[in-house]
Structure formats: structure tokens, C-alpha cells
Length: 83
Image 1 (cartoon, rainbow, N blue to C red):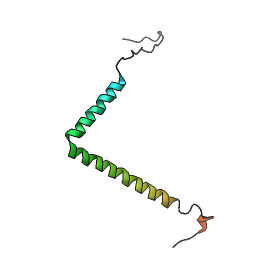
Image 2 (image 1 turned 90 degrees about the horizontal axis):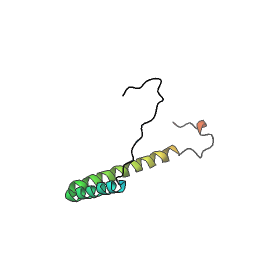
Image 3 (image 1 turned 30 degrees about the horizontal axis):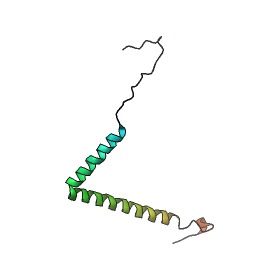
Image 4 (image 1 turned 45 degrees about the vertical axis):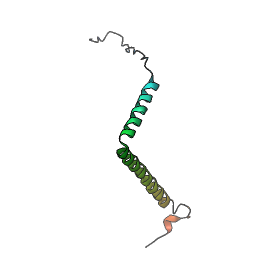
């Protein structure tokens, strides 16, 4: 469809779909559970790896935040010289 300059632009009307989003999410959840139960060892390894990775990231983040706040309470910290 060609658009002429003298025509007024109209946005296209979108039809509202009548499918149920909840049923889609329910199907995704059921399929995920089926896959976990059919591949128990593989799923267990993946879940443990994800949990371990998240735990390590949180621990490192907590350590970094703690180290960055060491000298916050000292007055005139810029004047302290450490060798």
C-alpha cells in the first residue's frame, strides 16, 4: 500500500486476541516440571550450579561493599597516608 503525502496518517488497528495468557503460562510451567522430572540428574546439576553461582556473586558483592565502606566513618580520610 503506497502512502501519499496528502493523506492523513492513521495508525493501524490491532485486534485483541482472545487467548488466555494464564493458560500459556500454566503450560510453560507444566512443561518445565515434566522436563525436570524426566532429566532428574541433569536438572539437579543445573539447579545446584545456578544456586552456587548466585551465592558466590552475593558473597563477593557483600565483600566488595564492605571493603568500600571501611573508611567512611573516619573524618578527613584523605589526609591519612598509609605505606
